[in-house]
Length: 181
Image (cartoon, rainbow, N blue to C red; front, side, top):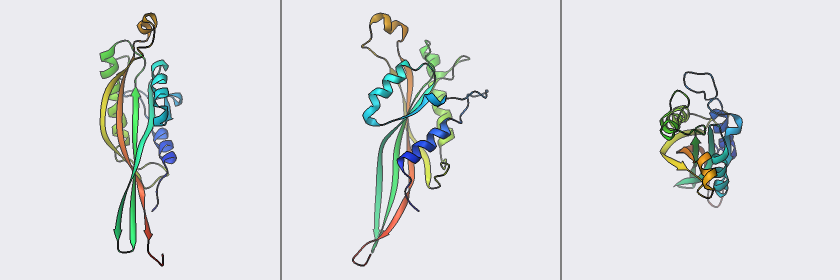
């Protein structure tokens, strides 16, 4: 077995997200423009884009990786886990409660997070046989830009969003150590 790369994991999660559909519809949950990858260093750019993007969006942000190592005699085993945060927002919608819970006009970020968790939970990512997705914590947040003028704020008050954390088991590797290794 070996480790899956973060870039391969991000590409596989993005591909899977693009297959999701709106409940009771065949409409895609996200357009290809609505599912993007950002680094933590570019998180501010992601938030700014969420404010102006009109459609549903899901931005993928890698938040770290961890290696757990175990030694047995002259053999070490390392298991890799990648942490991923999905920043989810529904269409730019003036009704804040409906933007959160959904209604006949919009899905809502809370139902969207449930759709995403159900689709990703325990999923072995295509072409990455060792990468398994596990949900962690999630929480809602309201994104607004207080630096806008009063007139601009009235037009674009903000967006209901959800941050969903995932842990992705990304494989393991085993090596022999010592003088003759």
